[in-house]
Image (cartoon, rainbow, N blue to C red; front, side, top):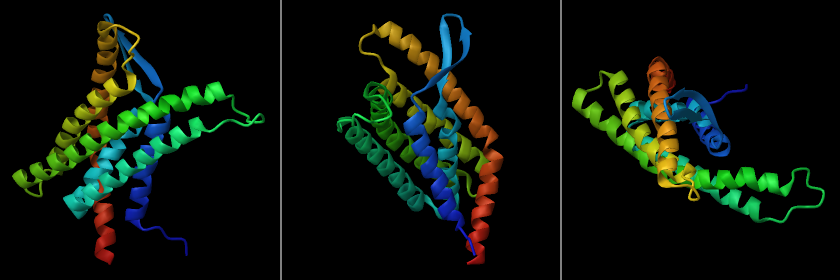
Length: 219
């Protein structure tokens, strides 16, 4: 009989979202124009909140040590993507390679920088997420899952967004004020979108906790 353990499925989705964010997060799409600021966000916005929510579900059910172990697994995954991207770019292309080397390097060269930026921001933000989640749980007890879930996400994702955007998208060939305006126009809406998605995903966090606990009770 085809059976997948619930925790294994959750971990697989967690790693999938990390891989999607790393490999495809270099694309920024426009949201709106507000004054002199053009608001935009990375396409990774659709998977980043899922990563933090899964982290909170695991912290709620299994505790901080298991959650930190999952975070370390995610950090190692980002590190491997970084190394493989570097290797893939360095290898000489075959004459029959269906993808032009310039296009390949342009896309995955960006992914290499994004992986490096994400490695740093992800490590700091995810560990901070677990720390805040556990601290809030100690302060308020086992109730108010919605509070510790969203508060930990708001704080950690702000840190993640600021660090990542500066490391990934700062253009060294442009003046600081041009970079600042561009980055601010990405950071603010990107963080607010993360916060909004975190709130919208709160019922799914409750459902995820209940779903995962039901598997433990059966054992």
